[in-house]
Length: 102
Image (cartoon, rainbow, N blue to C red; front, side):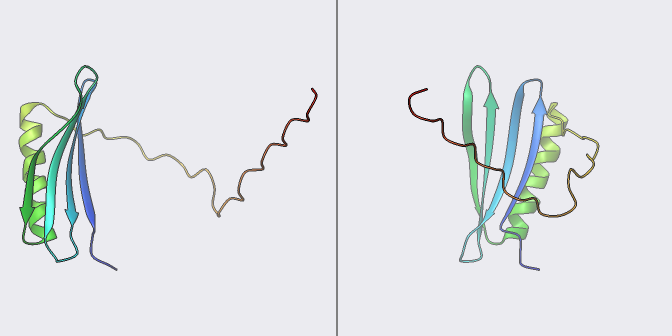
């Protein structure tokens, strides 16, 4: 199995959300970034960082996630939904174009 290219931890507080993301670079290093989204303020990005390895970046966002939970951010846990299909579905049928003059 190939190495992870990205890892994301998502947290919520009311209508606000926070994403902690680690992204692998081609040279073996990785970057991290924290993004928040609030209805009033929109999307904000900060706390960017560069790490020697993807494992170090994942460890960093895991620590940040734990710190965010202590500040009141929460991970949403949802029940697993049943599968809607068990084999690849066919593409949807295109609607016929309306006839001209009608």
